[in-house]
Length: 291
Image 1 (cartoon, rainbow, N blue to C red):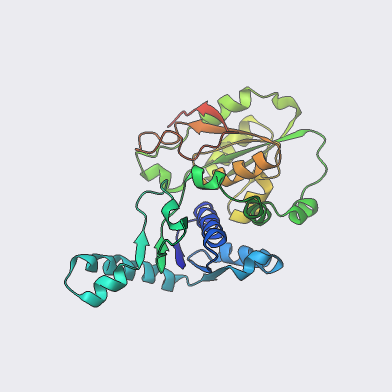
Image 2: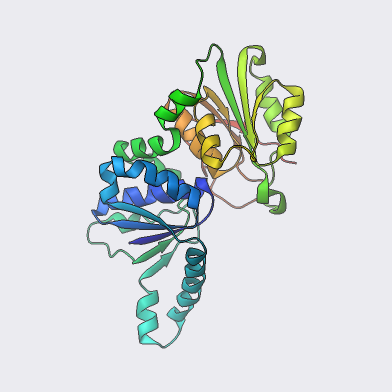
């Protein structure tokens, strides 16, 4: 099976988790074709050290991968034509329209797997059903204990992390951008006099605003790539999430390490998603305040 992986690091991790689960359950090889060069580089650093490298492969095709996605979009329309060959070929592709509906039926004995699978697989039911070995593999990609030992000084106070998501959310009305008031409100519930605060955002203005009000280590997007930020925040004791898949995986990792995670509720301002979308039982829900 080939999975075409689009999106940022958060989406790439969901797709990789799906590939691991499918491969383990069906005993089939899965090839991930990713548009994200950074993710492929980091995945390849780790996968040769594990048995999982024999069942999962990740390659980067960049522009070619994006073009392939467009071609497959067009081929999918041939399902409704009278061309027998094109109908047969397009029937071997499966594109999931709803990211929260993982195709569990593909994992049943005897199920016919598609050649090409596309989707984001943002389903917490699927995440909670991952085997422990797959969870450990994903944790190592995200957290990388050796990286933490090298980067992180010994901590005398507890460490709190914030991730502030802006980016294209500012242009997607139904998603909604979390206001800084949401983060301030959750910080105020903590004793901020004895914490080390680490803040990351794709918006430098948000970092500047936070640092004016709280002494904090800021992870500027011009100096920290996505994986540096992911690993730095995954090492905190308490994490205040944003409504993004990138935040989700930080929260998932902090939770696995025994930390505390605060997540916004509702996840989006007015988008029509399931009520439990991207929440895990260990997340503490906090009322969302949107701009």
